[in-house]
Image (cartoon, rainbow, N blue to C red):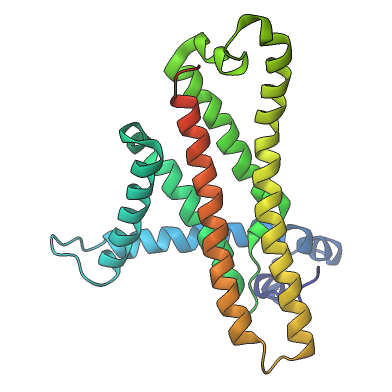
Length: 234
């Protein structure tokens, strides 16, 4: 899908920055990387604005960010229990990055980096690797029992099933987020081309809903995988 106008691509083409015409033509292949960095810049700026004048009685943006982070912390507690508090930084980072990545699609000239499978695969691989790192740190080599089933003679059957199931997790996380965000982008482009004066408001409201749901689903599944790695094998 080609966006009719992308701000950063237009900016590079105007200013050139010493790039050749061939290099400028290739710039469009990496728009998802550009907008992923834009998302990180937004989050860093939000953190700076919320923490530059900390008050015991929070007001304004500090109050807003504290409410957001408290809700994420509460969700971690309900999903992972007391052990989940140690994973608050990574879970909160995932949730906020995906949410802001999804929401910037509502800004004219911006595209969601999560509408590209490469961005989502990178996030999913972080979850996949961290899940098993948590498992081995918590249980040592006994973590292998998570893959062998409850009875020893079921190992030949359970081991390949469990391995395939775990390998399918990053694929599932990647495709679910990509499919929903890419699909929303396509539908938005089609409707905007048909009725540009009527469609934007309802489509933007739907876009906000999709952005929150997809960020929630990815974060919730990640927490479930982490919690599963912390549990004892049965």
